[in-house]
Amino acid sequence: MDSKRHRRDLSPAHLLTRAHTLIEQCQLSGNLCFDGHAPTPQELQVAADCRTLSDDIRDALPHTAPGDLPSLLEWYDPIHRLGYGNAPDNDFVIRQRRRAIDAWTAGDPSISETAIYEMIAREMTNTAATIDADELRLYLTLKKKRAAVPAP
Image (cartoon, rainbow, N blue to C red; front, side):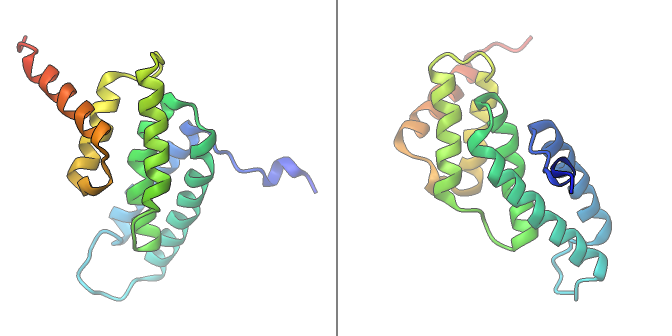
């Protein structure tokens, strides 16, 4: 057996492409219709594919370059919820978000200020309970900075 044939592609670009494709499939198959209907075989397959992708993203995140973390984290939560019906492990997500913030704070040029702001803002919108005091201060500082920029 060829081991390459069974190796998963956990590159951020591949995972993001799969996430976009699966979200489209969720829209087309009815996975985003929460009206209590019995899931169709197609919906069940898409949910299973979401579980597989969620697991792949979870496995990739600890080894992902900090610059790719914000975009993967953005997709990890909805893909996990669509596959498993619940939120991913908060502690795990916080650790990965912290890696991105720490790298940006240390001057990593692969992470933009905008990516950090959006990552924290998205979490503030979803569940502010996972934001620690340092992240809240950073968010407020970046928000104030963004508000001070004059419109073109």
